[in-house]
Length: 153
Image 1 (cartoon, rainbow, N blue to C red):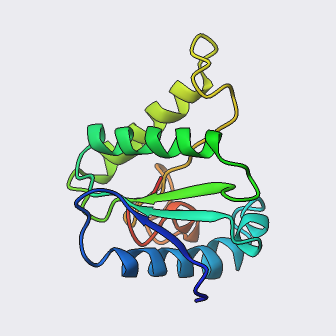
Image 2 (spheres, rainbow, N blue to C red):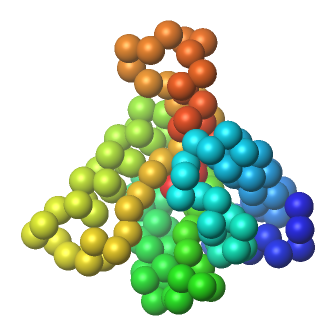
């Protein structure tokens, strides 16, 4: 991993935050980009415009708050500096179903026509180490499309 990892730590995060950032960056490079899971990831990774942020969030309310802070920063920053943010929550205490529901709520909120809060300029995706798709066999590799080392927005 290069020294160019952009790792930010939000208030009161665990002292192992640097390791969380490094492990997540390695996952992005080796899995997401390496297996071309997301065709949009290559450019910001190669241009080093991915911001990795560690949140101390253990619950939905705190993680949504931190996500909106990062969203506002993305809108206020030139894409040549920060093109995307990965917000990791290694202290997440709620289950994977609660995490998925939070992600669906965030997606729906960003897509509402009545609320131009982020003016259609942002989208969100959530990843979780225990992610599984309904109706798919337990050992199916498709689950890894949404699995990450830590709960990540």
